[in-house]
Each structure stands twice: as C-alpha cells, then as structure tokens.
Image 1 (cartoon, rainbow, N blue to C red):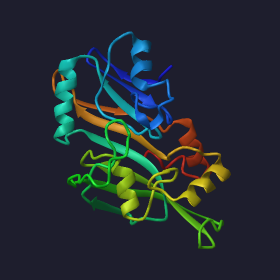
Image 2: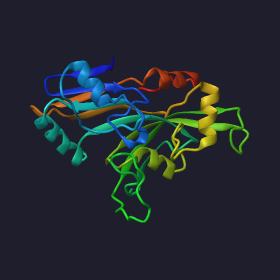
Image 3: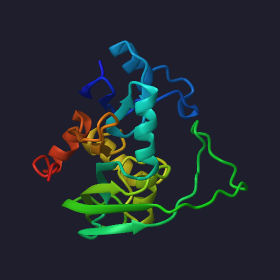
Image 4: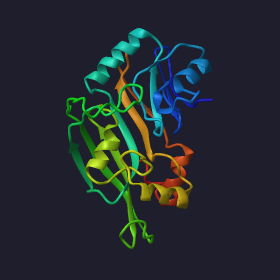
Amino acid sequence: MLDILYRDDRLVAINKPSGLLVHRSNIDRHETRFAVQLLRDQIGQHVHPLHRLDKGTSGVLLFALDAGSAREVGIQFQRDEVKKRYLAIVRGWPPAAGVIDHALSRRFDDYGRKLDPRAKSEALPAVTEYRRLATVELPDAVDRHPTSRYALVELQPRTGRQHQLRRHMKHIAHPIIGDATWGKGIHNRFFQQRFACKRLLLACTGIALRHPLDGRALSIAAPPEESFACVLGALGWETIRDK
C-alpha cells in the first residue's frame, strides 16, 4: 500500500518510495510496478501525475483526480509557482547557502532514453537555492584524502528542468550520494558498504501550491522514508533534517 499524505476530491499526494517509477519508462523496461498504476488501483480512481520524481528519489508525489485540476496545477508548475523542498546528502562541504544559476538542456527524452548528442537541445534557465544543514567528517580515506566529508543540504528548485537537482549539485562539485549518473562511484560504493544504502539520497520533503478549486494555500510534507532516515541517524543528523 502506498502511503497517502493528503487526499480530497481534487488532489491526492503520496510519499513515493525510492525505487518506484512514476509511470512506464524505458529506464527500466522490465519494471511492472508504477506509482500511477498502484495509486489508481488503491483508491479506485483514475489519477493524473502532476510532476515527476526520478526512480531513486523518494518523497511527496502529487496527482490530480480530474482533468480540470490537472490543468490548473499544471499551469502553476509551468509558471514555476509550485514550491518544492528536498533533502540530499552530498559529497564534500558546500558553502553555508547559495544559488546555483546554471542553464540546462535536455539529456533524456520522456521515456528515459538518452538523446543523440548530435541533436542540439536548447539550454534553458535553471535555478536552485541550497542551504547546508549539517556536516560530518568520517575517518575513512574513501578518495584521495585521509578523511571523507559529507553534508546534508536543503534544496529548493526555482525552475523545473530535467534532473535539475542532481545536475546542479554535480555542477558545483558536490554530487548527491547514490547518483549513478552524475555522482561519484567511489563514494556511492562507500555508502553501500558502510550503511547498506543502495539508493539515491535525495527526497522531496515538502510541496506548496494553490489549491485548484479555491486557490487556498496548500502545503504537503513528508518525512524521509526509512532507508533515508537510517543513514541520517547513522551520521548523527536525525534531529537536524526538519530544520
């Protein structure tokens, strides 16, 4: 059963687990479980996904229950009016706070297939705000240094480009742990071995929008799922994640 965070007659939100695709995709042709299908079967209604989370990302995933609500909230997403908050564990210690303003072009199509590099895709404006919440230095020579540094960061995308958070953190040399595409394998393997963590350490913990029926402010939050929370606890950050 999916964990339903919010439901009314227009919208429903779930806490998507890591490893679950939102809908059918060429990312994993053999996958048979999708959030759209599971939620539809669970509540007995057709659902319209309003945004996407990568397969490895957990957290708040929002759906509309009718076409009109989907259209109204879709306009909010197009105008970058929907506010989302993420938590991520990254390599190194980024500055205390900052803004990543780095244009991004599409790298994959809607089905997860990598685009032909010869096909030029226009780079579109992409902005992410970040805030460092906690740091740790472990006495392990994972890379070329005698110790290894990691940080817990809050990420707030101000635009909605493809894989924006993962690509932006790579851009500032603080890739997200568990990211097989834009991360660093040696650190990903260290977390697998030390913490039995085989997931992307990125979670959408909050989303804020205007309700499609009456325009009232709506805020939906989700705690990190257990696989993420266990790593936070192991690093001593279980009381910091919600600050």
